[in-house]
Image (cartoon, rainbow, N blue to C red; front, top):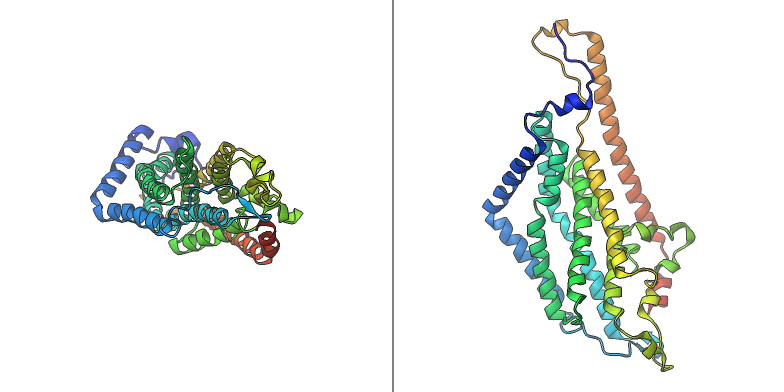
Length: 361
């Protein structure tokens, strides 16, 4: 009885595919876009949700985008400044959390990929690139609608680069969150567990975003955590984009009107474009983790032409060992994610939020 070798090189694995990577990309994009265009109700729902969220956020903050100087009164920021800071924090929170609705469909796509990957229909690289970019045009359009409605209703400052930065920065935050949702969907065994992990990560994404507590108020053990949070860089970029045009020096001329909004939040060390660059680096890490999650597990192939009784017992033991190792890797990934979530929740519970509120306002 002939047997396929239990191990094979990367070149042998590459030759298992019948088509080139370019052909596979064409097939994957065509299939995905055709499916999206046929599902008209889903397209209407996505566009309609962007419009609805834009109005829901824009109505209570209608006309609050333009703030008159001075920004401080009796040593504290005015209510207009507080409202606008809250709005920017809400925008970052919404554009990131909205990706939770995509996890169910992403998990279904990943199950389909596992079946097609076992049949060597598509390479991991082709599928990885497709799930990252196939939904990009619709995401750009729906995000443009949301930001445009918000920009007009809130009446943000009409500086030449204000709208472009508002759109670009918030979309980068949205896509970083989308990449994390893709990674969780690919690495966790079920859509339910991926959804819970995605929601739980917002516990510490919000705590360390820079709005609830300043970085300067964190103890030394946790002072490095905000540098890893894409929500912090998104919020800091919007804050700089909003307040950099206001002349803090004129506010300090009057004893009753003094202060610097960005300095109060500790956002005076980076430029707004540096914040986008750092978020792009974080997004690259999520994309790399996603690609690693899509790589096929090492499999032992056995030709089934001969009778099952003639198969070597040693081969069966090796197959069991490989299966056990694969299961151990999955358990390890899940356990590591759960530990990270527990640590984030524990930190959020004992963070000194009261001191931050007094220092900010």
